[in-house]
Image (cartoon, rainbow, N blue to C red; front, side):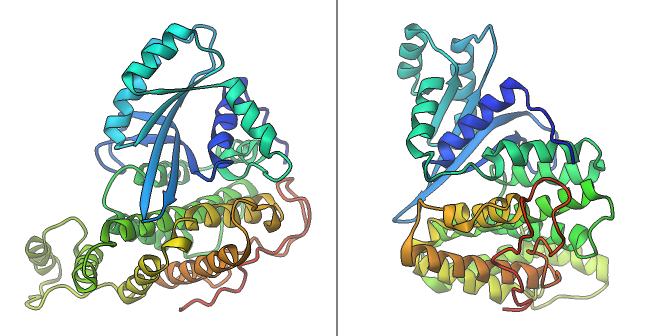
Length: 372
């Protein structure tokens, strides 16, 4: 499959994404903002970067990247300041090729950071021996993505946008339910026969799993100080009723199914498995904080790009191995919850034909059991 040629502006954005990724951030680009997932878009965030630390805490960074002759840095600084408020970000950063000192001073007073080309180049040069850009920071994967989206059906593209929205909209557990429903609806059956659409389906399926992991970690952060019985009850209600008040949900169910749910609606069959995952995440914060990054690397980096899994050097030793085990467990639960085939996380065993894998490759998470 012929690789798409990337425009300078996109390459600049990818370099910005790689900057954050090389520092241990989980990154996504082109995150559309809306009042709720799947509603009309307001604007978008060029780069969303998430990083986790102990005690369980999410550092949320939004970055606005502009590569133009007329940059208008003051306008971008104010724009990014507004995005930080809307997305509840901890930090707002404007990424520009070059910035006059007046704009830097203005940004400092506004509480916005400036990141320049030199800053990006210095960081990437410092880590180039051990770091390979993957996923949303990779030029190779982005070119493949653009090639496939140019011929893909609109439904797949809408799914991709929705998964990005979920990162900044909605409650974590409600979003997990939504992701599982996406997987049930669109990925339970065999992948599309079209090479481009099959690749994009695989990409979106992998991304859905990674976003679900982010949501689980996010809920663990929310629940970490609560008594266990309190957060379990809260999580089960969210899994059962979503964002709808329980009494209202029961009335709607009665009208739709002509059945009186006097004792409440039954929880999803996978509720106990999700609860056990959350217990694990809260009990092992040192592993939890690296899971989104490592799952992203395994599925999009190793799985779709064919990067050697030894290239993940930010996390090493026992911590990395335990994180790999936790990723397997999460993927196992997601496959069970969505009733997906056991090999859904496998690229397969076909020989190289499309240019996005350098050799026959088997994902290190093949043959995950369907039920945990």
